[in-house]
Image (cartoon, rainbow, N blue to C red; front, side, top):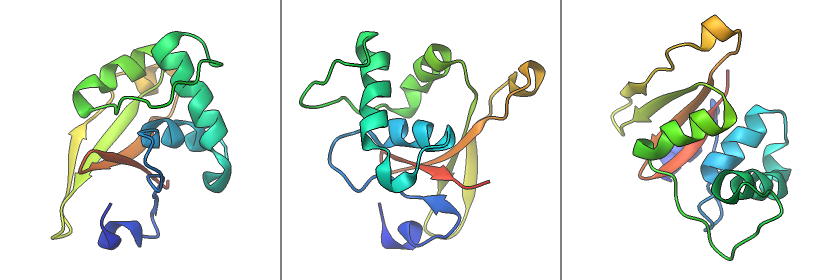
Length: 122
């Protein structure tokens, strides 16, 4: 992730590792985990997503793309609102959950930049 984005105080940049778990880190931080201590919980969630077994720990995880985000939404029953920022300061809303308010949950708000997810503080 670029420094101009990483230094934004309105986000949690959770991509500091080369393990493709940034989206799962966003999920566990959204659920209340500490950003600096969320890797173990992110691995458990990824195991549950990929293998239906939170104890399954492969050496490497596949990166979740924006096109695959619906699978995450369905698996974990949550809404995810996605923004894509550009270096000129423009933020584009690229995914809006349809029914979160109807079921009484607040959507998780993330940004997606160069294949990396980050949690937007609300």
